[in-house]
Image 1 (spheres, helix red, strand yellow):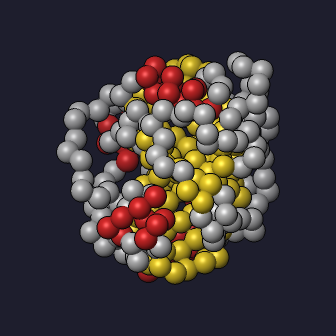
Image 2 (spheres, rainbow, N blue to C red):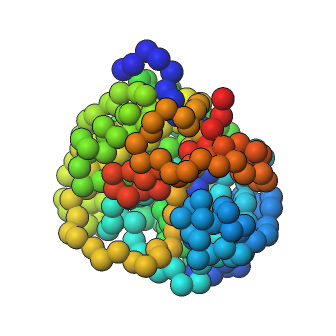
Image 3 (cartoon, rainbow, N blue to C red):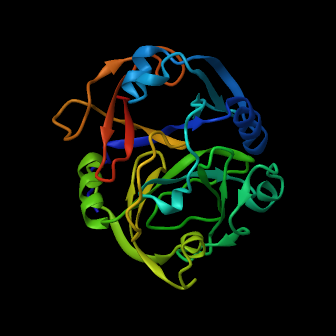
Length: 292
């Protein structure tokens, strides 16, 4: 593991495309104990920056809890709901919670719990369940009960605190790991582990293991990269669910391969910071926000 601090820091937010905006807004607020910190129209310059130019003017909301808003919801009436376990790209947003059993038991009826809370194969100190939200996006609801070295993971007593892990599905762990190591300036831990939610959905033996890589960021955040063999799937014109994740980086200059134009934005989620869109090896969209 590199001794230098990683270039990537806090997972700032996720952007979700909602075919039914009003229903999704109410459901996510209720399920995750969030409130709408801002509502308005998606500015054309931000729509273009997010690779969503056709959605300029769409209804948008930022949701959060006690801290900064971390969920951006954008109305996309034509978006098609698909299962994230059956495509490569963003698989899940992992949320830090205080009591996963209580939270899972109280989810609204339009949420689908994919399996009851259970201690993870990687450590009995991590207890989690997976659930599909109202737009087809997947969340890992994760309770960290004790330190889990060598990972730097937070703990909380709050019902829902913040996203602290993003999970990516890839056909090639080595290629994706190399790209993210360059972006983060940090080496990954690589290992094999069971991922029960994938085995259940894909009809594979529950004991089957997957090649995984984990890269630690600053502020007790990280990315998990899961290599998953999947048949080729036709790309939807506009998939509902998780469109991109936003991650803070110490600097955006310096020749980041695959980085889009850098621009500054005001308002919720930016406060004047510079940001740029990065496309990863699986086509995953990452909004990098500069935090010096």
